[in-house]
Amino acid sequence: MPRGAYLRTATGAREEFQCAPGPAGWRYVAPGVDLTVDSRWRPVRLELRTPDWTLRGGCAGREVLWVRGDREHTAEAHGFLGESPGFLVAVARSLRLEAGGSADVPLVVIEGAALATRLVAQRWSLLSVDTHETDLGPLPVEHWRAADLQTAEARDFHLAGDVVLAADGLELESLESPPNL
Image (cartoon, rainbow, N blue to C red):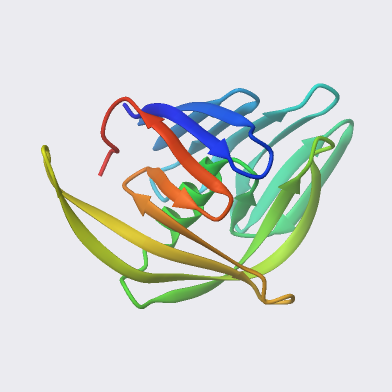
């Protein structure tokens, strides 16, 4: 079970996490973040907490549903995208792309301490897959790009199994055990 810490380079904030496959699919847990996905990597249970807000959500068919405060919301979307690296893992794995492939996906983006939400369309591309030799055997590392289709703003990240190794504005500070492949 991977356990480690990410560092947000812009703010110096640290996110200690653990993730593991489970009976429902996969689960990512960090302070204020609890994300469980099914075997297709779709969010079945999400809970985000800040000092003043809680957001709970999941998917139902082609829609995602969430409650923030006392209001319920729905959107036809592929999933959620938040500040935690666990969301990058879940969305990337759900797309099941091969190197060179891309997919346009609507996502509900969750931002800031108020857990504000908005629907965005993004193009996710698996640019390349490189294999690195390690003491435990070969480690495939994927280079991904997620680009907002309205603003063209893009974010690159590198993924090995269920761990983000690096991303724009994010560093993997520590990792106690290898990623689940």
